[in-house]
Length: 378
Image (cartoon, rainbow, N blue to C red):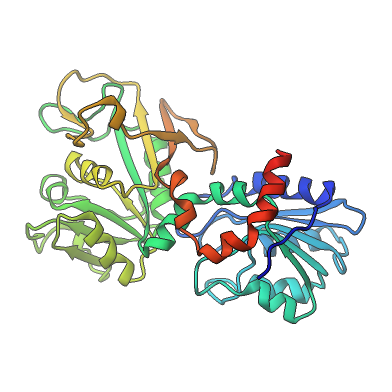
């Protein structure tokens, strides 16, 4: 693909900003955050869509659906989208085909899809006679999904780490009691997350001490329709009567203490989004290995003064080596009040300096001039 030196119109640039904003309404995880806007030939924004999570309509299909619900004619229009439209059939159909079927004449997208099964949408669109341009807001779109790009490049699941702690960073009292540090609202939020992920991972220590079920449940205690794989990591055996084993076959023991090995095994089993829970040991191990993409902390207005700390030694001895996280405005915002708790949502800054190595270099090369033009305008 040759470099795109097109100067985009103010309406197209404004639509991309709107698409980037819409994308932030979705959740991070196995799929990227994506937003899409449909523009009329006169530059009017006719419909906006975004991806609401695994199994839901992709942003392009969501925008098309919104336009149809409003009775808007979108034949001959332009779609502006933050990521190359997908070209494969997963839980939903290929967006490239949906765009063609809708009669959309032009597509402008920010960055190529690096995920092999989904890539190639631009080629399919061009073959069908749709005008395709790319590179608008490249840098902003890369930043929007830098953790996802990082996970795709590493062929590992996207990792969410969950902590429920007191104000003084304790996850259990001195006598070991921990139920419930979080408010009922925080617990309900956590269970809704469990219903979206592919796997939930704890250490053998958590299983032996707490005997958790690790299921996704509704507020009234019933099992949710969608259940994550229940994974336990560690060298100790998981008792045959442990609740985590369940009876549905959705249990796996990962006999390792190395996070990268655990993630590799889960990836080979089809897991693309894993949530790490449990005690200080496993939380600290994943953080020390720099393999956490998203951090969700439920902070209870409670003080214990002693007890089990949320984290153990991360091997950091000087402030210069501290891990830094940024507030994440996706999926409801960086800080939310849940009952008496605060829900803190943060994203890793690790990929911010490495995402140029997380996507195919030919993609960056093909967009380099367009990226220079767009970022200069911001």
